[in-house]
Structure formats: structure tokens, C-alpha cells
Length: 107
Image (cartoon, rainbow, N blue to C red; front, side):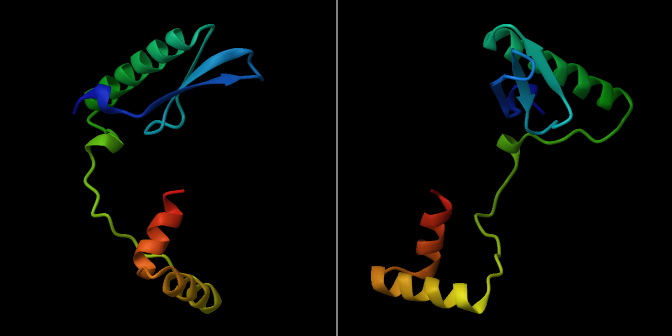
């Protein structure tokens, strides 16, 4: 598993008046720094250390989202009224309900 494949994000924390580095696969971890670059470097190092610690303890390590396989399918239950509304919208647009729902989800 490549530790560089994790999903990182840096944002400004008004509460802390610093940049905060985050990792989606490790939601309990964060790193505060005065610059975005330092926040990213800090969270990457923290994740790397955490992965090493989990491996040493033979505990499960989260798989990076980038390395996961996705089928491209999932089921969503909606009310009959929403189903009808989507069917009408799809028919009016001349597309399948699948294409209509997919385009709405991509927004």
C-alpha cells in the first residue's frame, strides 16, 4: 500500500487561525500549521507514522480511496413520488432514468 495514495486536504481553520491538514481515510487525524505547505507535510507525516504503528501492531490499515475498486453501481431508495418525478424528467429529456440520476449526482 502506497501511503502517498491517501486523500489529503488542506483548509483554513478560522477557529485556530491556522491551516489544517486532513486525511479522508483517517478522519480523527489533523495537523495545524502556519502555511498550507507545512499543514500538508505535517498530515502526510502523521498518516505515515500512524500506518506504520498500525502495521507494527498488526491492526487493519485503511485502504486509500484511490486504490479501491468501484463497480460504478449503488442502489438508492426513493419515495414513489420522487420516482415518478424522475421518470417524467427523464422522459421529457429523452434520456434514461439512469443517465438523468447520474447527471444529477455528478453536480
